[in-house]
Length: 275
Ligand code: KIV
Image (cartoon, rainbow, N blue to C red; front, side, top):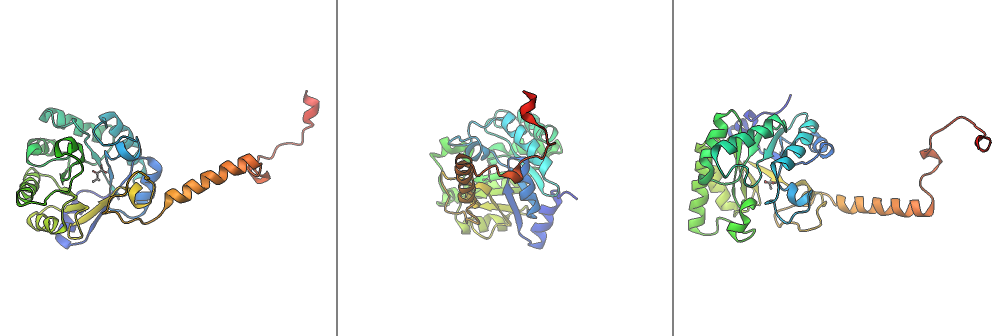
């Protein structure tokens, strides 16, 4: 049976930690799903790790729907959450509802995530009223890097902590079922987690959140660009894959691949006579 958002409410009550990982295609969605993870996020981080952009700003609704469809087909159990990309929900409330609906209708996601706090509370309320579960995202919000002046840790001043708390409460009051907290000091994330009745999912926010999320490329060594400080590397899959590619190239060059066992058997024909 597929996980639903009820799992998130139950985990907040019981204290069991929630687990989330990203996925962007069918094959990796299957691998992630089979790990027993509670929920899979089709993150707009696909702008960085799949499409090679410097940030998530250029990611479109078409990109998100395309990848969400593939991930949804690969997830038998995990709850599929899909990101609303930059400018797909900020312009107006009706636009936000329509685009959130597309991620469910066309992408077959079960919930959407959007970035921001009080400023997007009306959008969250309207999307939830349309029977679409919403996950919030506060703290460092990568779609806002141009306004934030770069990828900066949030919650470092009293004013910033107050804003974070205000945003968290606005997200909760608007009906979100959970909220991602990105790149804030652990004590600040702990405070927000204590104040909320919905679960917090941390990334670079310490161990006291109700759950954790990572971009899988970072934690298995598939993204060579940059590894954030908050990531633990669980594997160096990039090195293994790179080595396999290089071995293939040299074996084709030296003639050791393909070998006889890689060929199809055929009838004993006198091929020369055919010409
Ligand atoms: O896009 C993404 O992958 C995210 C996570 C980093 C939370 O928003």
